View (tube, rainbow, N blue to C red):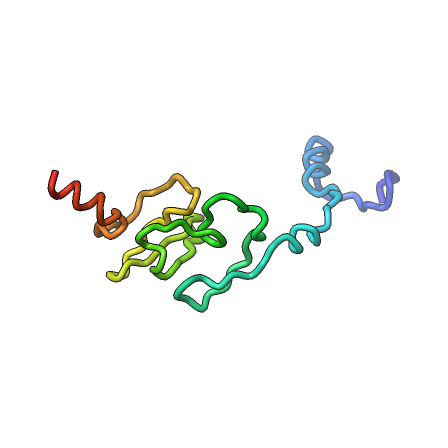
Length: 128
């Protein structure tokens, strides 16, 4: 004991003590019960995968890849949650993942075979 409480003296020098105390000091942790109660289970379309997602009232009035799909041409394609990129994808008939148009993520870079371009827009590109 070092006389400063019940914590035993360790091998850290006094100059490192402050940093040690900042790292290992007990923090008041708020219970996560209220966060969990606001979440719900969601099975991805075309998949058996279940995600824990925000509740329906969080996206009321706006398009959402989980609760309120827009009428885009990929809406019937299976969904795939990309944990590594934090985006929802739609898998085209060729097996390529395309960002879901209702996903608010701005990162739209992906391997693409052109299926994510809406048919009317694709026709305009081809016909000029």
